[in-house]
Image 1 (cartoon, rainbow, N blue to C red):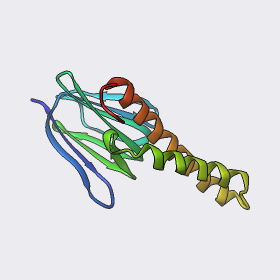
Image 2 (spheres, rainbow, N blue to C red; image 1 turned 180 degrees about the horizontal axis):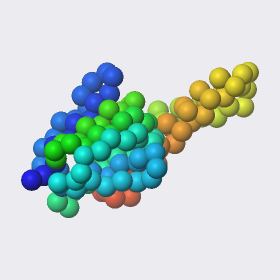
Image 3 (tube, rainbow, N blue to C red; image 1 turned 120 degrees about the vertical axis):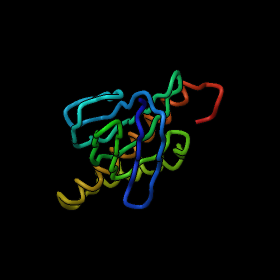
Image 4 (cartoon, rainbow, N blue to C red; image 1 turned 90 degrees about the vertical axis):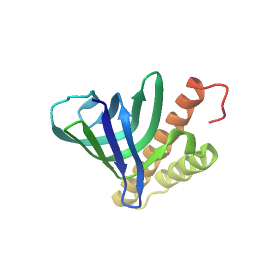
Length: 142
């Protein structure tokens, strides 16, 4: 019995998909993989790459944290933000990285620094996942 996966953010349902063979996620204590018939659990997500596998196909997503739950062959990802790899706008992510870098340089408070570092981390994750997608599928633009 394959997995059913839901990826949800505050703004929208990013994905509802049945027939998934494996989910690989960035847990806060390290990478985790879920196969059908996995024991129930819930954990926090770290920012990183979430990958859904069906047969030989991989479907990567950029996630910026949240929660991850497994129960009865269903995986629910409650993400702070989630974006399909093919939807990542590399130019926009590069611009966000540069804005965050500049904000870190001119920070005026510890709160400014924390916000700028979080923005930089999000931009770097998006860029890394876009690059991974480009390498996996060199015949298609990222």
